[in-house]
Image 1 (spheres, rainbow, N blue to C red):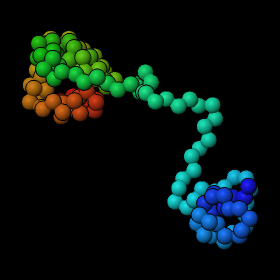
Image 2: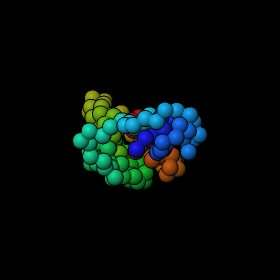
Image 3: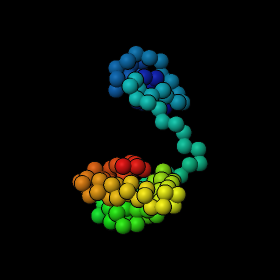
Length: 139
């Protein structure tokens, strides 16, 4: 079986390809991809997954902005709202908020109070995009 060097179509015994019409010597074996198409890398022992795997690749579930706002307003000095939102930067911000509240004897709890009000003023999609999926840690 002879294949066209341009398109990979079975050429037969003739010197013209019946598929693309190019004049080329028939080749046997591997055929280069047609122009404009990229060749895919070989898959050496890798499994193909149709669903996302667990771990950091799993999509985050949406969070309720009212819950996050109430946690920020009433328990914000402990950084609970940051842990509820759950990003890596947000957990660090929660620890920083807790330390700030302890060192300032509660004066720094104004920060989560303002954050709670900001959570309530954002619409649901904007809240999810910025704080849940975007990982915005402060304000």
